Length: 561
Image (cartoon, rainbow, N blue to C red):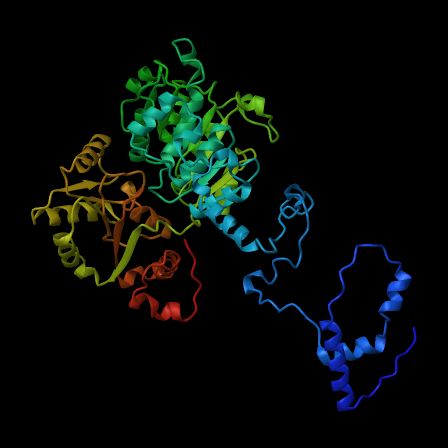
């Protein structure tokens, strides 16, 4: 390409050139008939002068379109414009190799909102749409802790339990509006006939948690008649105390009212001959205390040839009462062919024994005592073990022994009955009852020195509000469920933290609030460390006397007895 050298013109020459150009543009072209002209002639008539064009462009300028101002919102609209079909968008295609990738891009904010809204709604999801993550969140929200193999999802409502309509109606009549946490998880495990170890605070609904799956299963078995009654019951429930056994029997009666299942309560303190005659009628479920139950087995008033369900309630109390040997003898009466193998298949489970262990507390030593009877059990715990109920307000009152009666009188004058007062000895129960009766209170007294009829009459009077106050030993620390009981007083400080937990557990049951007051004297120093630890675990206020006690400030170990 040839180079053009610049030509410099003077001011006069530029003006002359401009004038000539203007005159040339003003001269009109003569009209002529259209005719074709050869390019060669046209080139001759208008010679091409590149230097002239450069000068004109440099000094006269060119007609350019006016610039347009673009809105900020439209600035990047057309930066990338592809003609893609919507079906070709791969942004949200599931990737089997990375299903949990982090949302990134323009819609990441919207995606994160979708995840949050999904979590909020997981309580209302249909069970078939719940993921493992959803169930994990649900368990955490309800303080349900599980361990073991083949743990089924919990039930959130009774309609998810797949129970019969008759049993569901009985559950509603018994007052169970919705499942409690222990029932949510223990019932599905029981319905699949798996062995179970369940830990839950007192008053959390443990009885229904094992009664409902037991009744549902036994309802499918042939009804016991005069002939099959000779082989014994289908299910047995063993309780450490008569009072707890009676309460379990009451609950079982409510749940079996509209079915053909018959329940019997076998207790000590009653005529054995009358009980043996009653057993010949045949019962599907027997609730009993271990001593009287073993006595019937030894006298051959009862056999366990078709026992397919065993529940040990309050297992820790059984050990404390040294009933392990008695229980071993009872369980050894069950034929070996009825016990599960370690890897029992699902079909054989129907005709094998299901073993349930329920308790409020459990340590490794107690658990090891039962392992020989359990086959691949599921573990369910409500709240952290050893923390008690969060619905109970606990307080300690430090005073001298001589000040106790004056203090309890002051508290009772402001309290609303019914009220339970715990003492450590039978004599103290009798003396305190007489003391309180002097001030006009209606007081019932309960302890192991009274016969069975007197104990039952006292409990019935307390439940029916004939008595405003019940003064009792640890006999009533388990299995006593009294409606609207809002206050428990430990007149004598218990000697173990387990007894303390069970005593205060008489209040704050199910969905109710409660209060527990414990009198503490200098003689109770051995309980200071366990009490402090228990109160801390329950987020309770630590009294000044306990927080600043010299023994605890010196760094002594705090051990839960």
